[in-house]
Image 1 (tube, rainbow, N blue to C red):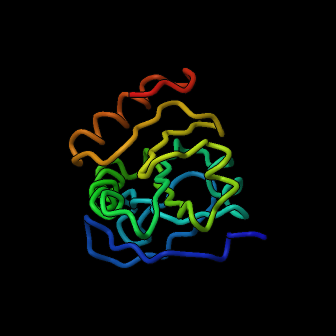
Image 2 (image 1 turned 120 degrees about the horizontal axis):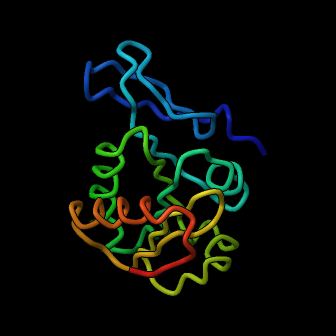
Length: 154
């Protein structure tokens, strides 16, 4: 299954234009009007995870969540804020663990939310539980600075 035709509509923070942003692609999404970087926020499941996450040229923040999880619903807006703040530098991918059992098993998810920063298909950092946007942004930026260091948990 290919996800290249799946898109989200994102409003540019700089000029207000609404843009279609695909789930996959080379580089990072930019506004068609002013060319400012756009936040890249998409969903993935067992079938699309490899294409959406592992083949991404940008580092990916993976949000492993569940619809019934209160802390997951609380952290989602904070993660979206981080994705907006770091537009052009990261991709945020949301994975519902109840619909993506293989992904959940692969990363041994025992509690949600579980957050990962991945680069080139490898986990760079893990964050368990909800946190405010400022703390999540610091965590992501520190993980980006680590490069390809392996799987540290913070």
